[in-house]
Image 1 (cartoon, rainbow, N blue to C red):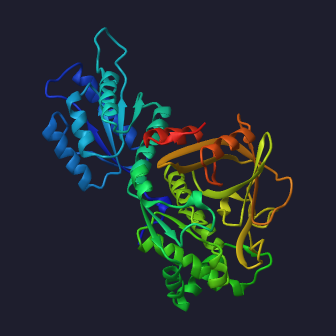
Image 2 (spheres, rainbow, N blue to C red; image 1 turned 90 degrees about the vertical axis):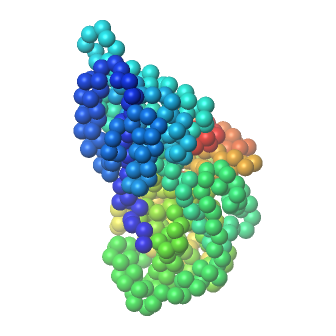
Image 3 (tube, rainbow, N blue to C red; image 1 turned 45 degrees about the vertical axis):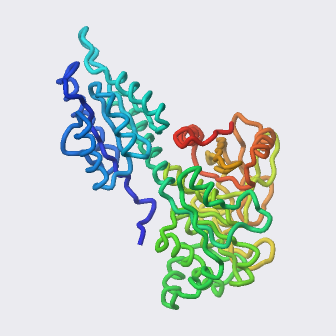
Length: 455
């Protein structure tokens, strides 16, 4: 069974690079390496260092074998003094995922060049780019607090790119009728970002839903009730099926190796099960799992990116309407609860009937006003992936809407123009909303993955 996705520690392999012929100031390089090791202890990552310093092709191959055995997510290379540039093609050949290149500073005392570290990183970056191999660059003093933040960000970017390449996107039932732009082409997905797409029928899903024992369902109902979410117009009689749907979706993520899950929630599910799956989707999103409704596989993949980059809980939303400054964000009721006001407060989460056919159950809530947010999207057009993002702040909605309701005032962009540009770029009608300002980070991720960025 997979662990809680919020508690997965990044496994960072650190390779100190050198050369057979010592150059520059070895003592400065060793002192800087000591500072680097102290800095890495502050990252919160699981840090691994191969046994010996890499100086040639055989030692690099041995170090990379150690990294594979240790299950490294990210490889960080250190040029505390300028390393042999001939090793870059070997590293690119043996490690398919992005590499983080760290250049450390020169000794500011004396006339002698002490490390040539940034030149070394520049040399490696030039080779890696010619090889079309992705990388991130970090430059600075290990004792600089700002450097630590940049380092952690670079490592998360590299880890997320690897996670996406190795991800399994599960789609239950296909996309909702007519939502062709959200359909999942498994070959385009794998060619575009490396992820694998797998499809499961609603019949298979129903077998899982019905397969849980009464005891399992009762335990989950107790866990849900402990959250303290009150009924609006539902009753406790609606909880057993809501739990079954939640447990079934979680089953695919914990037992079928699915990292990002999307379900065709309509039109069949309310008829087949007498309920919508939105309570389960909201719970999974709150747990930090990448999920989406209406068969939006790329929406689920975008949520996986957001979670892996440390952006926090991700809410899938329609772009309902807009004016010169704001976007009305609305959906059926599957947003993570932590993006809403507290329980019992106006706009706080409540268990409710669906706005349309009045069947259970949704989590009705308002996106918390006064919250910095990033609205973003990942999608495919003509076989290639594209990405966009804009930052803003949620404000009090102008009117109450059933389901998930929110209003975001966007910064530095007219939503009317942005909307038209995105429609012409083929963006589907869902966006992802995450708390915080993350547009620059997402743009760096797009560059790392060779995804076209749409401003």
